[in-house]
Length: 205
Image (cartoon, rainbow, N blue to C red; front, side, top):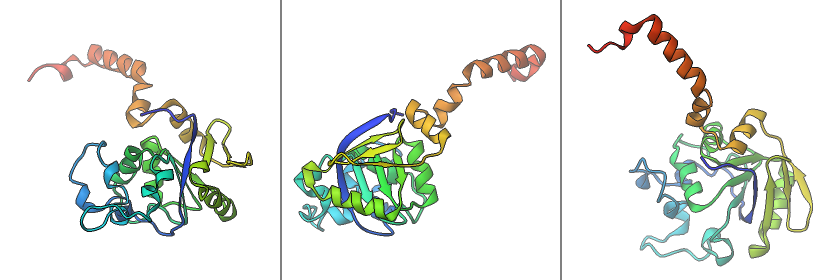
């Protein structure tokens, strides 16, 4: 998993409440267990017409936001079914941070496991960032995870809270496998001791 330390990128506004995981990536595009290639189908039903052409009014189809790395949304983002493809699609598109007043719990947890920083902020702060995000190509935010600080295009700053353990994992690029591998020396020591004390457990059947 890629580390998340400091991100500077365009923020796209998505002022909608209850954006569920089926809106983030429809079930029709969940036929793969690969994490790549899903960005094309991010918000597919909002991005594309029935004939596959783009809807020019959808935010991520606008030239200023095609390479957005931050998404500013509204309450209860990521609700609905617990599909890990939702953060996969966001990440494959290029979104590394989602800011909202609240998130669905499972989606929130899945973001951290996939290198995406979900930030919960009071509604007033979200409204300000949505306003900043309306500036198009000038809607650049800097998210400093170490300092837990968001800097807007006008230089103003907003602080955010994050669980210390989750912060450690993102800063160091540690998913569940990475956390396990941090204990590799202890695991090897245990296995060697077990082999010496109970060799029959490793004997070929």
